[in-house]
Image: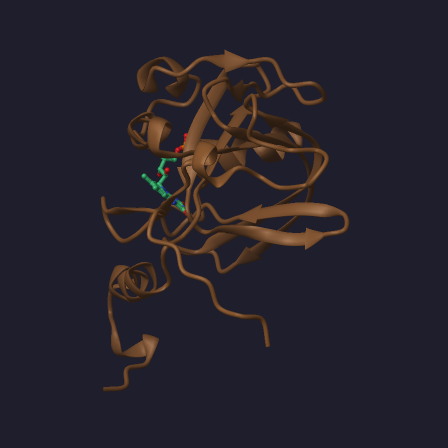
Length: 204
Ligand SMILES: Cc1cc2nc3c(=O)[nH]c(=O)nc-3n(C[C@H](O)[C@H](O)[C@H](O)COP(=O)(O)O)c2cc1C
């Protein structure tokens, strides 16, 4: 079978093809503050590394209507030019999912998700104390891809500090302890994958 995006009248049907086949996806659990300082927390699985030097992360909040309205996270980032990407895992997955609840602007998801805001070193946005790894980021650029419901505002941020839970990172070997990290992957809808059944392939 072959389809083209223009075969579909609803953008959500095209989204479902991507969300159901481009997986498992990592999740950026993004904390921000608005100009008044109220914290906000939300997950985004359109997420990857944009550059290793300078270390830069990128994720994509989608617009919420045909006027190009933004979710609270990108709105806060455009106001403050800062954010934290927290990594979620097995022990924080339920809280991460709760934090996706749409709340009124100015209301914080930290309390609703039952996670603890901890101070960051360089940015005003708090990090999630329970997260195994948190990346403090300063906005470096945005790329707007369309201006309709479901269009993306790609957000890139240069990493200025990285926090690790005790024991996760070995500075001598440079390795992250996968068993302590307990990563998860997002599938489609409300399904997630454990990263436990590993295999190796010899390098070519
Ligand atoms: C695991 C997961 C991944 C998500 N990924 C995205 C994403 O990549 N882009 C997006 O716009 N929304 C995504 N969402 C939905 C947002 O988290 C949700 O709209 C949230 O309410 C936005 O919060 P905010 O308005 O506080 O920024 C995801 C939700 C979940 C549970």
